[in-house]
Each structure stands twice: as structure tokens, then as C-alpha cells.
Image (cartoon, rainbow, N blue to C red):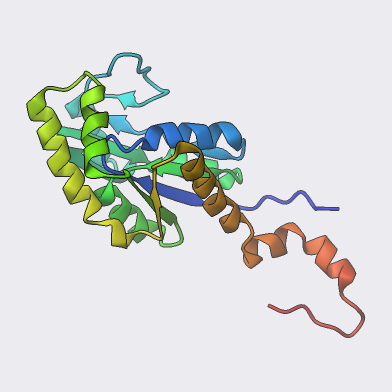
Length: 216
């Protein structure tokens, strides 16, 4: 029988160009795995239609955001399209101490900062199936002007140029396949020897014969 032990969780960094479908994939991943949580970022941008404060983002003004920066409250923060985004260090650490895995939906700038503090974090980059599909997705939102879409396409090229900094690379061509790939990365992380060895320590000890030592 598996012993119920408190094993610290893992951090999964997920980045992608805007319009790639990252948020939809992350939401589906969260729905499929109760041991996963997502860190809700702080942002200075205005809420989009349907977004809820505290669920999608913590919406703050610029003065409040920079006060949090000065307090060292963020494990990472960055400016994107004239607005600022940041991830609460306390919120992430609290989830990890409870043994929950945490997803950080952040860009390449934030990912670099997190790696400095958490080099053990697993990073995943998601690509669209083509340049044309990305443009169609951005235009299909109906929320942005042509100039904004052009800016986001340029930003997507810049974001995609950092793919080699990540541990895993996925393409969101078929949603179900991309979700299965994400689930596989999470599952593989949880099956590491150091984690499984702690989780199944009573089983391992019971299986050891007299005079035989465990392999470290």
C-alpha cells in the first residue's frame, strides 16, 4: 500500500505565442488533474470580456503593481504590450508546500527569471501548427485592431525564437493530441525515481531482503 507522504510539488512553466491556444490547453489539463494548480498572475491591463478578477488575473493599477515589485513579491514579472504581468512568489511556494504541482503561464522573459530561482522547474513551449493558423486565430478573436494583430504577430516571432530554451516542445495542431502530450510530461515528472522512492518508501523497505541495501 502507498504511504501518504507530503512530497513537495513541481513547477511547470508553459509558454506560447499569443493565439496558440495555450490557455485552452492549460484549462483542459487542470480539469483532468486535481493535483494541478495554476498561479493566477497580477496584471495592469484592463479585463477582457468575461474575465473575472482573482480567477483569470489579479487586476491592479500600475502603482499597486510596482509597489509589489519593490516588496519582492514576484518570482517573475515582465512588461508585455505596454502592460505588466507578475507571478506571486508566496502563492507558488504555498501550493508547492502542500504537495500540489503548479502551472505558470508566462512568457520567455518570465521563464528565464523563474529558472534562476527554480532551476528544477520543467518548461514547455507550445507552437501553433502554422503562421497562417496563428494569424487566423488572432483575427478570429474579434477583440483586436489590425495594427494590434500585426504587433502580436511580430511578438509571436520573437516569442517563438526562444523555443530552444525550454525542456519540451509541443505543437497545438490537434487539440486532443496536444493535451495528451501535456499530460504525458506531467506524468513523467511525477514518476521520477526521487519522487517515487519517497512515495513508496514503505513498499521498498518491505521488499529489501536482509543484508541487501537500497540503491541511492
